[in-house]
Length: 201
Image 1 (cartoon, rainbow, N blue to C red):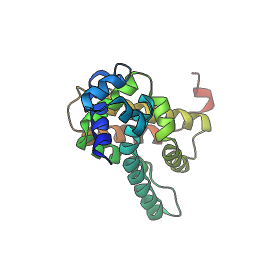
Image 2 (cartoon, rainbow, N blue to C red; image 1 turned 90 degrees about the horizontal axis):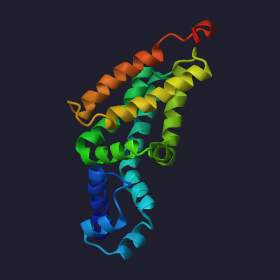
Image 3 (cartoon, rainbow, N blue to C red; image 1 turned 30 degrees about the vertical axis):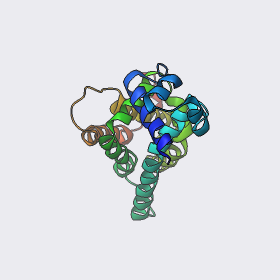
């Protein structure tokens, strides 16, 4: 990576973490990085593409580690399903390790969460990995209906987002937070399936 591109990344991350994505202009990023507008357009094209690449370079190693852990877990459990707790640890612990090493990027993600950009971010950078993990979770809880599993999956993504980004004042490192979350989610996914008569009770 060129020095200019790294300076643009660093400036964008600092500014978005501090004031949010919408409030951060390309002019501010240029001034903070000490580069000209042509440099930003040459490397990224637009502010949206800059954010995409900023997230990609942090998310890609996390996703690779997640899949590596999942494949190990599948091999160890074969031919049976992987335990729910093992799947959740493989999905969530790599996030916690990166977050502890780079809390400023967590603030960036908190900003995009607060600005309602997370659905687009998940679709662009996390969807294939989320689908692989959810397929394994589905094998581990076959007694759930598709509707109920869909809701539990929805709660997983929401709880993860808010655990990582929604309480900046929370005490404890990210691995501690994720430990609490994993225990909570294991109980949720392993809870008995709702009987049809109980859905609207």
